[in-house]
Image 1 (cartoon, rainbow, N blue to C red):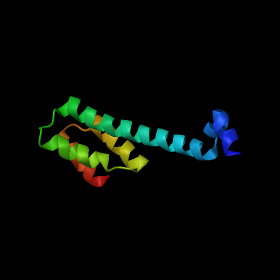
Image 2 (cartoon, helix red, strand yellow):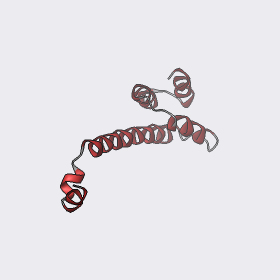
Image 3 (cartoon, rainbow, N blue to C red):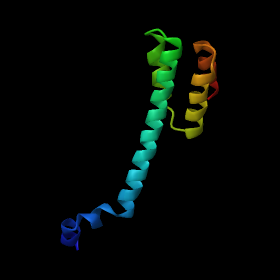
Image 4 (cartoon, rainbow, N blue to C red):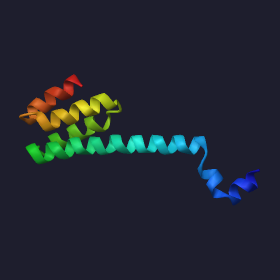
Length: 92
């Protein structure tokens, strides 16, 4: 059976386990992209200092909840200042 799986790689690639891993990878990739978008938006809009940006980026990288990521992305776009965004960070 193992030999058959190895010979026919389509059988090996189309398992529920690998589909689940691919789905998890896609989800994690989307979260990572959204977290980067938050930092990018803040950088473009407010040009934060070299001391503040790493702190914000480090906090954003800890986010794993989709709702919190979406909330902070919206705050990054809508906030009138970096201080306003940082206030939203404490609420997320």
